[in-house]
Image (cartoon, rainbow, N blue to C red; front, side):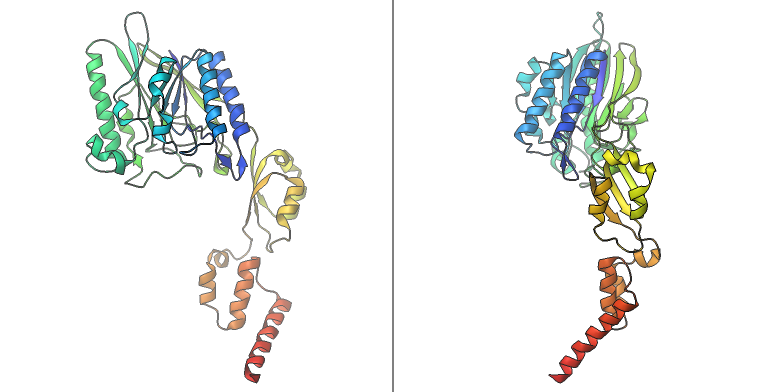
Length: 388
């Protein structure tokens, strides 16, 4: 049996204020093409189908279209809910959808109810268990967990799974796959993921998954292998500039009655490249090494000693889709590292306070002429107060 492990579609998400729905439609095109070309039997979606609990109508329509195209390509689909999803809304109509090959796992009651797929003619089966995102404070009691932590609730949920597996293995050969939306120890994070640490320590031990033939994890947006049988597929699109150098795609895996076979990466081209550029404004505007970034989404950090006027407008004359602009002036790094409050606290008189504000707003110290103007203005104010 051939499966495609995906997760973190985040349908409806924006990228620094730019809508991604068209890019997500292109991803669905690549996904359907991969399913057909590789003759995939089952597509796994390990949580965060949507980016928010109340997705827009057009976003729900895109997911509906995706399910229609995947099942039309001959694949069944197993979906578990993530921390961005509303488990109740995502799970609506689950019993009816199951008849059409779409299996939703969004409820605690279904943790130990696997989706079963035949592996051969001798009765061997693959049991796919889908764990919805487990918020410790909300599910610890229902699961009988020792404490309201991610580790405790995940362990309690997997104990239910192992109990069900033990009974099934008494009757024949059963291979196991678990889907979980969580932060496993050893995973590399990205800036676009929502922190899961509320309610206890965020990371769960990797050895919780070692007894399964395969663990299809979701939540982290970088495609990565934590163990031969434990992997994150990552998100199909980048959702932050911290993912600029990440390959985006899924894991293609084969499972037979003998266990896990080959696992290989499938990568899909991005809708638009991401460029993270640093330097002085004039250099960035003429450097031919950045020609490729003229059609990319850009995150630019300017290192000019003085903040250039109309910096964003000038940058967009060459890099029209610049989305993020930061300033990190070269020079006295120790002074730059101080907060505005810290610098003002050491000011010795009113002139220093005003010059400190000038520095804070303009990202450079006042020059001699500007300092003279500030001093003259303050003296005029003092003189006016004396006359009164």
